[in-house]
Length: 305
Image (cartoon, rainbow, N blue to C red):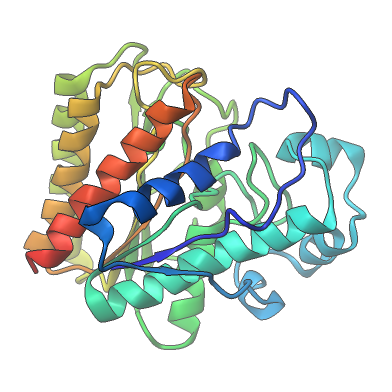
């Protein structure tokens, strides 16, 4: 299994910033130390090019991100201070999902050890998201003729508003988001399928909702044609201890979630690229545990293909 990482590209943040940037390095370290992933390839991706970004983002926005001419309000909405290093890391993270999508087409499953930047709109960033990696990856592969139809299964606790907005007029991409009804973002944009869950939703109710979602995806495939690729945003933030989430899943519930999605992909013989998406537990180790569990399940799935 090919795993793409960008954590060594520094993202300078001020002291006390609440984004848990250390989770990415710790996740890669966990993978390196794991016998389970001994045969996996850890790869540094190429940065997303302007041509690739422009499949989903406006030329003005890409230029202003690159040149550092975003307004203070725009930078505040993104949540990261602007720097050349921030731009490079954002391009690399998007490139990692493009690379993971290509690898999934060849091998069945791959992962970006970051990514899932689903709050980035065509002309603005938001919520720690600069460029929308999943949307860019799919539209890039479509432009190359590698795929025709794709689905995004977004199980981050926050609704994928940027993804929904960018792809709203693209019928060849099915967008799906399962999220907390009271969570950020305030301005939720309609996906092709949205499932809003109440505060405190636990394992059983969550998995019941996900089971219904997968059934609807199955029907959509039957009605409109088979997907060529799935991008799965496996957020760690539905976890009960997450600071920014309002759901109450346990580690076991998150394991069931991942298994349900990956088994559905296997049943339908669909390649899947995984992005880690959000995770904000006070104990960073919990975030790493959740992401490691997702990758472990993906590894087992890849070996059983």
